[in-house]
Length: 529
Image (cartoon, rainbow, N blue to C red; front, side, top):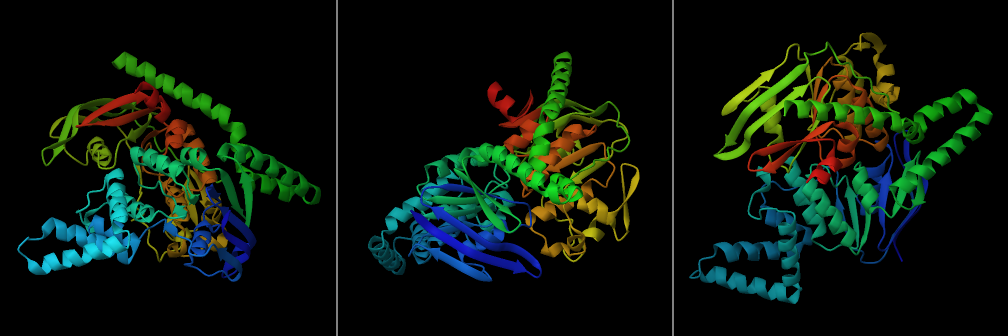
């Protein structure tokens, strides 16, 4: 049964058309993964369906009284609310009554007649509106997402705020759930929990995600937003990859009859899926060799086009930690941790939000002093940081000036390149490169950060959630370049496929400050554990 339908829908911003006479239907019970490059209009399509943006023309139909919930890419929460209040607010007026009842029950003095009367009035309202059922939903959702109900939203990190926004969307038991990058800032335990919730969810789901494991597990259909059109592909993500590659090959062959040069450019720009798939075997062999080397050393010890400048070679030893411990408010964050990181190692850090991954990085980089133990760094280290929160980006500067500091040329791997040519490697057209940062989508900002990061010579790269908001084409090419990178990489990521495809070993936060080292990626760690 169709729940909503878009017919001949178009929308443009300036001269840039995001949707051109596009059609889409969402049926009850299906889980649709929405794919497309950053800036193609995925979030705009979500906003049209949610009723937050009006299309230029076309018809949007929904079932009468359709219950729809939307988790935005950057959700906005009221900071002076408690978590309980914020989650309950997803229920509208009923949520306000539930939240007020919750606070009165906790803090009321039983000789306070006015409070007792208010409590009685609230009980009446809740009983007449099936409120006890929804109160139970609020409390069970809080429990499942491990959210402390009485903490203030203002005290939360970005990851915890996303959990609250997700709980706010789930609590109304919607018929349609719209999710824009739902796994961003969630730790692995929360991601697997969310997968199980959505697999058991009785309504329909339309979601945008860069997490290929999440996409493969959940999607029953893929919809590809490609040059203003919505193309539907029945089946899971791997089915889509095979069929999309074949379709792009057919398209390129047809184009070749008209213009061979144009067709070649189309293959390079559009056919990223197939091009990378043909290189996958070599990349897997390279990664296996690196992992084998890491294993041997530990036993002895006990479409986008990204070019990385590895700088001067660091010494063979990059960082060594011996019996390092660090506690915060008497809580052990790192306990008796030892490791030797050598040139070429690519190490993933895995652990729940708040476990101490950022703290360990600061200890290894000597930005924090350990309570006990020793950290030694090798010689000639050149460190480059990937800024997850994008705080370094000036919203008023243009994309080109952000990368080239106002110059026309940038130096990449010892070679001068025009900034416009360099930015085209990151899928920024000249007009977009001259645009201010403030108009970029979340994924475009991430591409801009990568473009700026790779202009800095470095033999040690630190990345904190680098895959957030990247489109799949850029993400897979980033993986390829990181595997080829000859320097050392330390990366915090909850993207399971990214860890499997890039890192040579993982450091896993097991709890109580214990951190263990496992050779291989996420799947290898699961097999060990």
